[in-house]
Figure 1 (cartoon, helix red, strand yellow):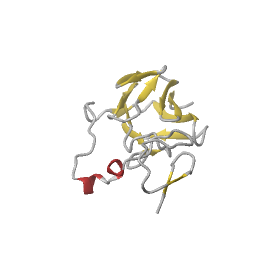
Figure 2 (cartoon, helix red, strand yellow):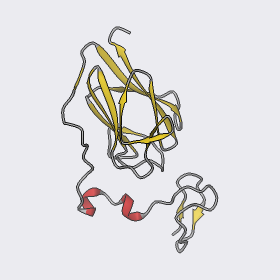
Figure 3 (cartoon, rainbow, N blue to C red):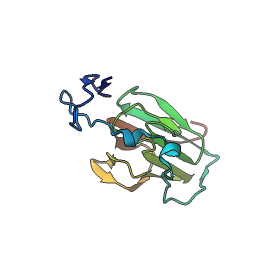
Figure 4 (tube, helix red, strand yellow):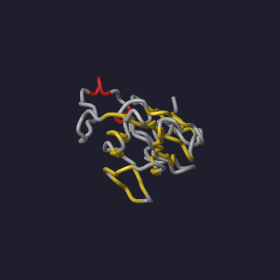
Length: 157
């Protein structure tokens, strides 16, 4: 049975060795990358951020998808630590270039930051790959083919 490219849908022959799709150039997933953690017997990715954090009672927070699949989608953030990725996370985005657990958004009152969780394709702010980056209201960042916006507003707005 042939696999298909996650980006363009081209059929990939079972014996094809290339790690990229010959039509669109997307990286083909390695079956080891998609083995569930429980089957692979490896620990899940852990953040280097301190645990905890808290949401301010006077603020509301959200992630807005600016570009990519489902542009304009607003995802309210209702807990201090939110993981964004392809699967097994709080905010799921359908993008073959994302890791299952790609980036952490950590909020502590009126401060917030993003932290790349060791993703393959990285997290970018102003076209620079980052590991950790402080967020402000209307901070933009990119993961895979998606540009995202972090929004922090007063509760009554």
